[in-house]
Length: 170
Picture (cartoon, rainbow, N blue to C red):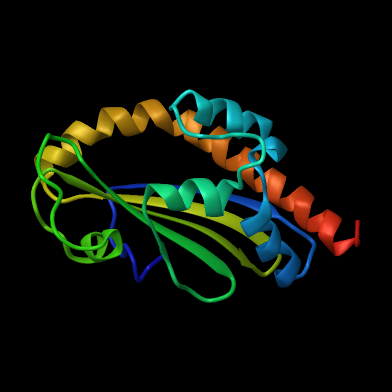
């Protein structure tokens, strides 16, 4: 995450202990279904996202919103951009734009799911490319932050449950 967005204006972190090995946890990260996270599914449905029961949370849904960044085996990293105004999208991949775009009116987003030292975490970082965009984004961030936190914790719980089932051989 530090490589993607070392600086940010807005940040949210959630953690959950998972007593399982890295292989089981990361397999669960990639395999967890929306049907396993009912609260997250309900909240994301309000946004119009396709959260059909059989869709995988990470690989089918989140990766459809931006670029998946290759990382070490303990992390899934996602990059996204959004223009607050009706401006043309700058040239480049989403990951390139998150790393280097300075065009005004753009909000850069980095999100991860990481498993290290028995803790599964998700972190979101948001960086606006200019002060006006940051000021305009702040009310939105304050509005969505509670629901976003509930969504993230529901996702983490679903991943933990799946990882524990896999570790137990169920």
